Image 1 (cartoon, rainbow, N blue to C red):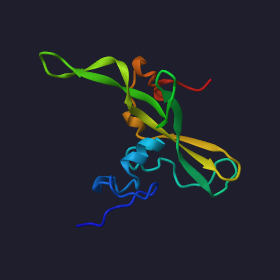
Image 2: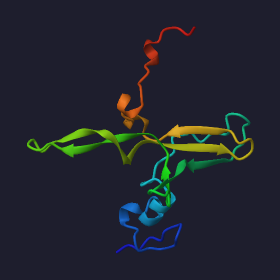
Image 3: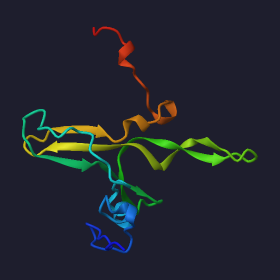
Image 4: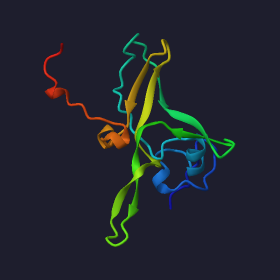
Length: 153
């Protein structure tokens, strides 16, 4: 049997399952700090700052602060994303999922990360899993194919 993992944030080992070891934190800390639900590899190549050439960057999980409740008393952090998948519900007779006309706020698509230069402060933005971002007006997204755009003007 493997040794229990310890959360790198709260130092607890009660909620860290084997499939969570790679990210290093427990589910409670993930939810409290608005962190990514799984380990996400960086999409940025390991190169120096594009602006000043400095070799130290800070990789950041971009999060947003929000609040809920009638009096906004329940504050929370959540990962910042490009869009959200749609909620689904089962059809009554066919028993098949079908999209609803509202976003699933628990299912973000295109989580954002930033790389910040420790010298000049330049920020490089990247999206995790860009190929999984849904396209359409209901997502606030549009696919632009530059191969068919013609010569620059």
